[in-house]
Image (tube, rainbow, N blue to C red; front, side, top):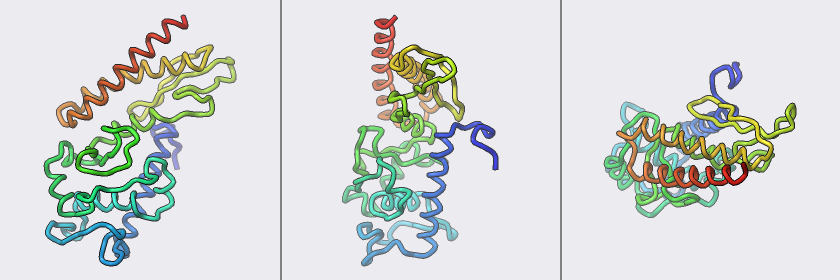
Length: 242
């Protein structure tokens, strides 16, 4: 098997991909063995009144895949899913527990029909734990990963920064589009983190340009407001430290 570097993705992105594959395999296993229902309800809470299609040519519809995946993340027992902090204590709104409601909601959502786009609950409201018609949007994987990687700290205690042993300085790196980019070496880890956020804010603009014709305007607003603020603040901090 080739390493992540050989196929052009970072270690973090490879781990996220493997996590998604494990979740998909677990979901398919449950579907094949028909063990979703508890006392007539999917995962003990979901209601499928059969008024909307769940399968077509023996394959789950996109709506049903998203619905089952959402319910499993909130109410399932899969250890790989439950180990991720973003899914801890998450739940679904009463409306989203109804498959027919969720199915109809999907039809009017920007990006739903795009291949490979994901249902996201916490882009509009950071840290949100509720899947609902007011909090969820469909986004492409690279937008989702871009925002997920933003939150990760490493052993240096700073985002996007690691200690560079050979130089005795702190190296700033960023992942974008499946590739890792070296941003430079810094005397102070905080300066590396500030520069990381400066670059990240500009990459957010690139993502907006790439998807602006298909992306929900609320997601665009979040990216613009969040990263514009971080760009300004990071720039100010770098100027002060020079």
